[in-house]
Length: 312
Image 1: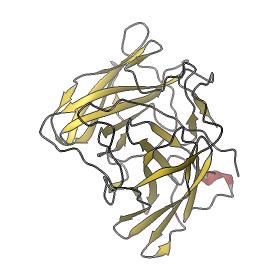
Image 2: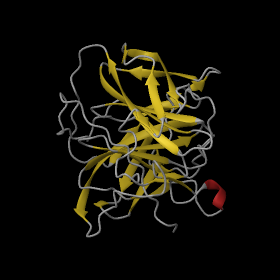
Image 3: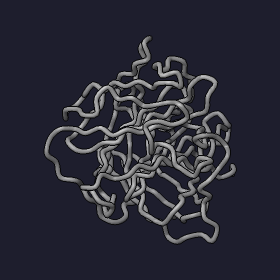
Image 4: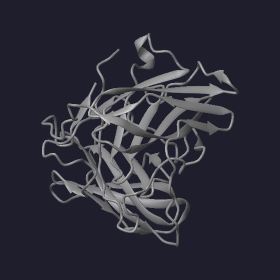
């Protein structure tokens, strides 16, 4: 077993109208099926893990940090499918950044989620020569948060966050309790394992199709699965890499994909598991609550980097 991998937390504040009491049990229903190559295909950066920043502040909370600023072209957007979204990352000199390091096959990862935990998307915008990033998102009315995860050349990795208000009337979704099984058409995915605040824990995602274990999962950005979790109450965000990779000659392509997570607090977490099978990326959603608090809490300060990113 590899050393348990720490998590990356990007904390944002919920809109006042939503409050902090949302459960996140069945908000996402059965999940969404996305064809490979679609702009809405969602995945997590494999191999990256992170702890809290040296200052104790989480990444993603601010639009500007370390001299870099996430500048949305517009702070509002219409609702609908394939809504164009553009933005720039300005550097310390005030000019749009054009030089990025490629990390996990991409120069920038954009995550979007409505503040009631619906509509989760992870996309990869296209960069123009003038430093403008462009993508499309499927947006429903409500308050959204977007996160830009990137590494400027010769700089430290950062995650910046900004709000996006989508026009229209809406009713915030609420969830119910724990949800440990997700059904996506012929597929059933189950979550096993307990989250313990302040301790590394093992989570196992098991994929079955028509009641039979799936043993031929396909690599997706270098992994057999990717995990994202959002904490109820403040949208604290984490992603982790599975235990093992397709290239290590020991990790099996299903039906089980094992992760290690270290959640920093008691709470309920909406968990998204992305996997690829037969050329299609699917996302299964779950909800899990911490069972107890370990005696040694997860440290909220680390001097590893400005945003706490490590690479393995």
